[in-house]
Image (cartoon, one colour):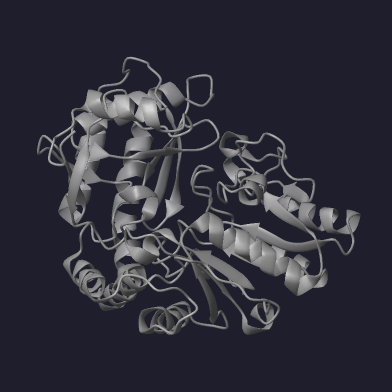
Length: 437
């Protein structure tokens, strides 16, 4: 195979089949081959353009190949690509200071690594070191990573390769009010889902080190907790001296209309984990903790590629771009426009159970006439949208939530184009049923 050979879809599917683990799946029955991006669009090898409304699962918040980010990463690559954390380097240390300022409050101490799974794994380790306790509470319908422990604290069985969670993990019901796991209704429920956390703590006194949650559950189906839920949870955790970890993998860096998802509530996490959009496409992640909690991590620790010079330079440029362009405000405005259009579609089509989300993290839950998850229908919708030049995602336990998380630089005209295409596709229902990965 020559380096400049253009592989066909069939060529690449054969390579995937022969050389990748079978766990690596892809969207679409008729997949395309993506080769470049610019702003909100990606392009395949045939030159076809797609409006990217999934952005690598909320990674390219500043847009694909943003020139100001590419320039700074490229300049660093030309000087020095790698040392490691045992040496002093400007990009990582400047990034730590910039990130603390971008977050605000008392979350100031960073540990850099390469993925959200690694950041969450480190957060759980730090919780044990800081508290001397050994177990954790997570939520049903959560997703926190693919390593052994982070997949073990993942509430969605779909994402657990090992079907048996570790014995030191307790699962509390997710605050999914449209489909309450406790079969209750607000406000009469009086946050029974939050009180279930106290039940766990009372049944396991002195054992739980930390509670971990996504501010908005992403792969769980774009589930937004009701107002007051996290405040109630933090009050419970404080009474039992349990730490709060917010997993900001998808909700971080302006995606929800705030700089970080937890800022929609009056809470003060002890730790947050960030990744995805921090490097706008380059692999970098971090655990950020309060000084009091961070003080427990004193034994030598390092991450070979944590704080990598090129990735840290890209992350610094990413934060500068977000500040300059006020992306949290842009996401809030664009999200209102997109949400209004999705609500209008939902009002005309009974297959849409609900539209939900915050900012530019939105989902439409699709159901059958019997009210069951309409996963095959969503597969068909996504295939048709792809053919019309719009890429979306799918989430939820039933893989039936059409998910839109475009770059935060999306324009009003592009939003209208996406809504027009969605209207066109929904108007063509029913679509031939079929199943893809």
